[in-house]
Length: 263
Image (cartoon, rainbow, N blue to C red):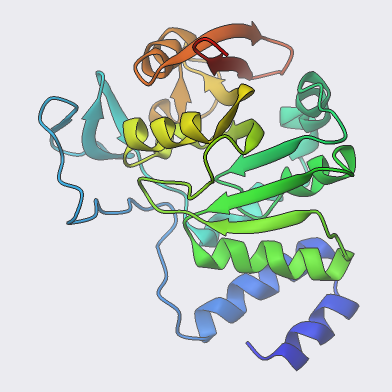
């Protein structure tokens, strides 16, 4: 899309409409797209280790790749951006309750892993005026949306970071908090990604995972897009993270906090 056109839509359209327009423009521009939801294929340069991952016939909502007994869920592509910004999300998920539970300091460097449209990135940025928010995503279309909203709102402490399926591309010992909201269960290479995220934490840094409760069959979310607390703790322990706390203050999701061992 041209800079002149982008400037016009930023000045004239509200944020929700802007996000949909940017998605449509990306489609028209000829960029490579990912169906929503879809699975992102493993990179040929990172073969699956039999000792870590196994393969099976994919279920309806999975990619057929199994990690520690859990089939990895399909990824929501950028065409699902409207769902991330749905008006009833405030009522269903109570994002402000989550943000309050993070206990951020004004100088914190926060990473929003799987940032998508920046739904949480832009809610976190006012709380870290002397710090910053790193919005990480592997889909360039999502990062384009974040950058468009950032320019529209003139927000200076949100930075986009292009990650890969194995690495968020963050500097070692550089972040105070890594926030993963409904993202971890879709990681194609969860062990590699979480190892890299753990390395990016400062010694006292935290990882906070927010996942729909897999223990509750009444929560109307597809099974592979939910996780039990037991499974999350097991997988984080495998990459050297220590469980610190679980909060059940959200209507449907766990808030699980982990720290570095010895941190």
